[in-house]
Image (cartoon, rainbow, N blue to C red; front, top):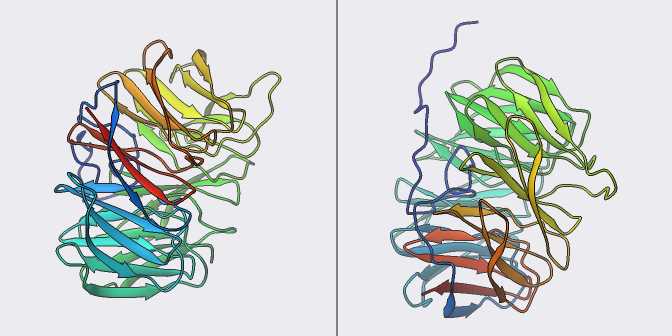
Amino acid sequence: MRLVVLFVLVWPMLAQWPQFRGNPSLTGVSTANVPAQLKVLWTYEAGDVIESSAAIEGGVVYIGSSTQELLALDLATGKPKWKYKTKEAVGESTPAVNGGLVLIGDLGGVVHAVHAADGRPAWTYATGSEIKSSPVVVGDRVLIGSYDGNLYGLDLKTGKQLWSFHTDGPVHATPAVQDGLAYVSGCDGVFRAINIKDGKEMYQIKTGSYMGASPAILGDVFFVGTYANEILALDRKARKIAWRYEHPVRKFPFYSSAAVADGRVILGGRDKIVRAMDPKSGKVLWEFTTRARVESSPAVSAGKVFIGSNDGRLYVLDAAKGTKLFEFEAGGPVSASPALSEGRVVIATQDGKVICLGS
């Protein structure tokens, strides 16, 4: 089958952080150059649990909350610029900012598009069940998964459904995008490549494992953790599993989505460990043990790894060695993922705080 490539092949590393994992390839890498030694610049009290990770664009932090709100906070001061009321609480869905719009899904199954400038509603689209997937914007369309089993392609300007692809389980993960295809790790144990143009499945790789984590792309290989206690490398050219990693003793699921940077695949596990892997062999290069399970996904900048833990701390690690450079006690569990921009890191906690740290 001949595939017409409509979209950019390689996503540049950005100083902004406009979506979950920072870019459509979900690499978790930024040029923001956040320092290793941090102090609190501001804290915002949202009033309830925050599982959504922040997006940062144009000096504004966008984040969802269990208070049924999408918040826009000033990156410099933490002061609210506007609040938008969603239909239901926002769970793990992270905003995406593109084309003057902010997009997010809520636990009622509704996708919301809001004007970034002032928080006015632009459009909504109702899926059949809750949304924990984060939207990804590519060209003129929005890609997002739903627990109704579908991956949706929506028109960015109008919210009109362009296509939907039905899987055999909830679509929890966020799709990664490269070469005109959306790559989805499924709760049905299947990794799929979906054509962004028309929503047709191009191929699939059966993993046999429930996958809640989102895939990260490095060249022709995807990296994703599973609920079968494994980390997988999936070769998109050979369309098969290149390698599997499983800890010889500690059998825990991987919920954290990987970052790929500087020749390493880095992710956290529910075994409390942050680990770096060799992308070619799956060999463990280093491990760092926290005090609780790690569901937060790492962000990488200038040789440093930023990652939260359910022990209530943000850790800054040396990306080459895994040694701890800094830790910050946030108060509540940090299951959401750090966002990096303009020399700052923004984290959210399960006790309802949005915290900005910098130098």
